[in-house]
Image 1 (cartoon, one colour):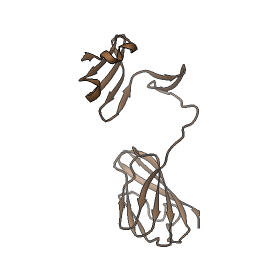
Image 2 (image 1 turned 90 degrees about the vertical axis):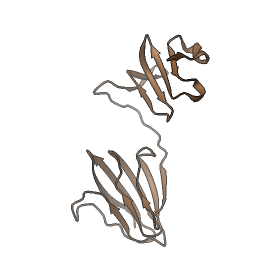
Image 3 (image 1 turned 90 degrees about the horizontal axis):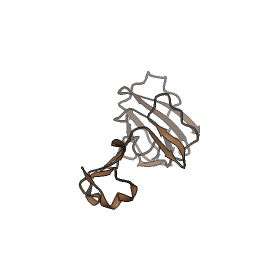
Image 4 (image 1 turned 180 degrees about the vertical axis):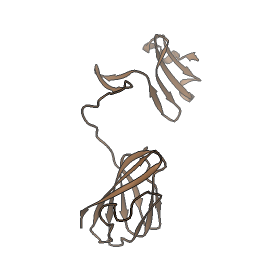
Amino acid sequence: MTKAANLSALGSNVTTSGNLSSATTLTLETNGTTAVTIDSSQNTAFAGVVSVGGNTVITTAANATFTGGFRITSYNLGNTSGASLTPDPLLSNYQYATNNGAGTINAPTNDCAIDLLLQNTAGASTITLSGFTVVSGNSGDALTTSATAIFIISIRRINSISTYVIKQIQT
């Protein structure tokens, strides 16, 4: 590891692999212990506590409690017509799609919890849910093709088992 001269104002324990403009990893250390690591894909790992304005906002300690809330930007999966849509928790835990024709919603590929808002249009058609484990007749409300219907599909994947529950919120 080499010291990053242009980060010297942060202290003598700031190091990077490579140079900052093309770094594959940025590592911040405190007293020789890694505190934060950021890789070239902007994946971030930290040890201990993350504070903002003197207030702890995230900790790696067990039994931690989040207080306060978060604003979330929902992600548009697009149109269902002829599409095969796969919700991805890295895009957002709140996603939405427009049912304007027959399509498929696939089970996510990673353990997660995602709420998907599905809004029908005049061209709404059958939506197939694929790759999920659901007991027949035990998945909530039916997905209709009514032009004004809106649904929330709560998707969960735990230990590689995917399931969903459907709630119609507008007819």
